[in-house]
Image 1 (cartoon, rainbow, N blue to C red):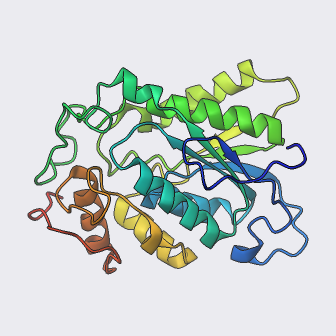
Image 2 (image 1 turned 90 degrees about the vertical axis):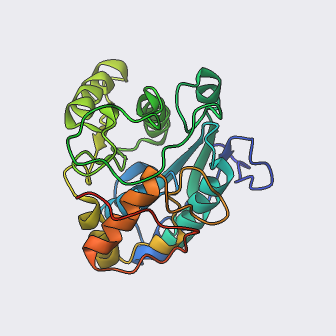
Length: 266
């Protein structure tokens, strides 16, 4: 990072990088002289990425990466990212523009012509890829994260992918990340040692909530709703998954909802 590079919060459309490294994560774990290795964490502003960051911060100095890709709740997610990073004491941040995914379309999250589904959750293993799947999105995120990690000399990239109790997205499977790690090995400098870490991939959503509470992760700052930015709708797939997770974990959800879907199928 060159001298004079600072975080630009006034321009949400710009790529923003903070060069404030002196207290990186110190506010969260209190490391006075931090000699831990560096890791990049993909921080969307959602619950899974927030808990992933809290887990990663146990062993790594964190640099947080956030992507705006033209999603419906883009500005709300960016705000959640900044608030979570503040809460976890992450000073090194990068905000990138990947709105070409909006131009590509093919997802209810990026194409206003495709409605976000509402209603009860489908039973686990029901099959089919939801219309909220953004084609090959996680590969776009990971490519940017690995490129930045290589520049920073980081040893890991953390992503909050969940397979067991999620929406059934194909880019949330363990085999996908195993393959990506091989891609990193083949496509980076010989001395580069970066591994993609997925600490939540085998956990249930309820387990993620419980782990977040154990770590003191700021779940109250997270945003999960796919379609509303003022008050979470409580009806979309993401809200339904979150509501079910908190209910099964026996933990009150700190977010208000404008409505709540019917009983989720377990």
